[in-house]
Image 1 (cartoon, rainbow, N blue to C red):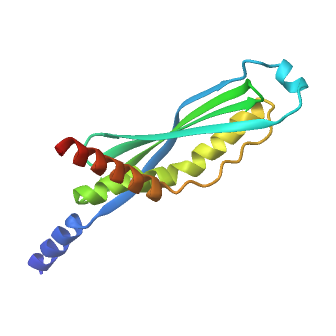
Image 2: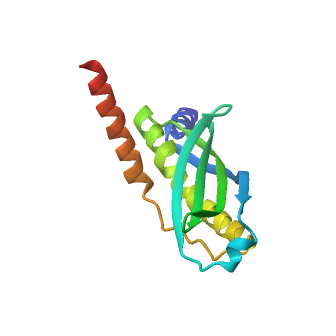
Length: 160
């Protein structure tokens, strides 16, 4: 019976594991350089969005993933506001091969963080007295695949 328990424990220890430990705002910034004059103008915004992710291995099997959303909204040629949120999470990830780990950190975790970052950014913008900024969903799997392809193409060009 002890051998069966040890075998079951060993199999369980080698199974892939994923657990969200914490989600938090790492950094937050808002600037409205043309206020209050911007509020007296006709509102015809153009929105620019940059998003980035970064990962850092922590102790043991813990990883921090940070999703950064930076938004610049212009009204005509003038910057109405600049807002940025770094939404972070701590994830326990065990027993994944290198490719699966890369995908999990590069696409799966940012997918989890995005709704939190989007809500935080929207709240920040409305507190600045601007109209709500509801960002469309982002396909992090597609972005991850594009980045892998770009890296492969760069590697192929370097070899030639």
